[in-house]
Length: 237
Image (cartoon, rainbow, N blue to C red; front, top):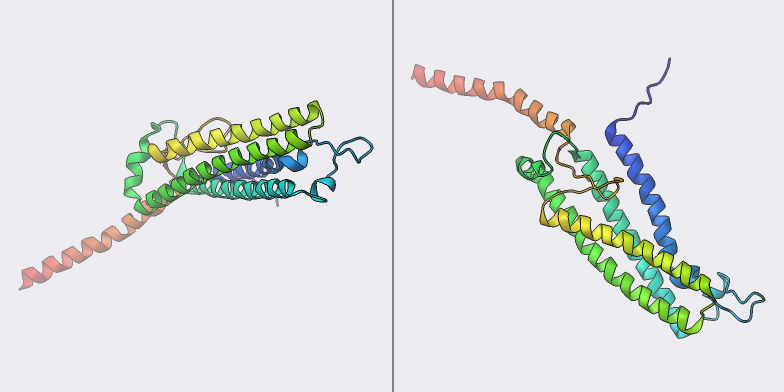
């Protein structure tokens, strides 16, 4: 007997968002810990390059402060990714993408689903606020890391190229988050953060539509029977 391993669209989207979540988290892990992963100069070593051990030992007060800020920024980024991932999975579960409907369709349709609307607004607001906090933290983190690396431990061109690469990764991610969260909050559009191109969830998922419609269908005969019974009682009186 052969097992059916066909994946639904929701399952495919969930797998894709999970893979992107993990790969982007790893990139940000490298990019935020600048005072660890940017090549620096240690004259006591034979090749003058600081090792990972050097970046954690015999630290000055400035070294320690920068290291702490690097890890605080990383923790904040991880929390942002968790909220972003949670929001994405909520959209995949409860919403859908219908190319035959306008992008703004959900604005009207979701009014019939007040619980979903409240949850969506809450997730969008949290995502937006956390993006702004993460942006401010990263600006501070980049500035203080540059002061440490180029003021005290500059090695050579490698220090510049690695730093610029990491900073560009951070800027690209945060600008994307800011654009998505702004539109999602201002226009009530749950834009996907993990699709290859910006995609807007513009309708309620069919699974949840069916649930509500079936509930209405099954309760309707009972209501009609109740009305008929009341009319009969009144007639007899």
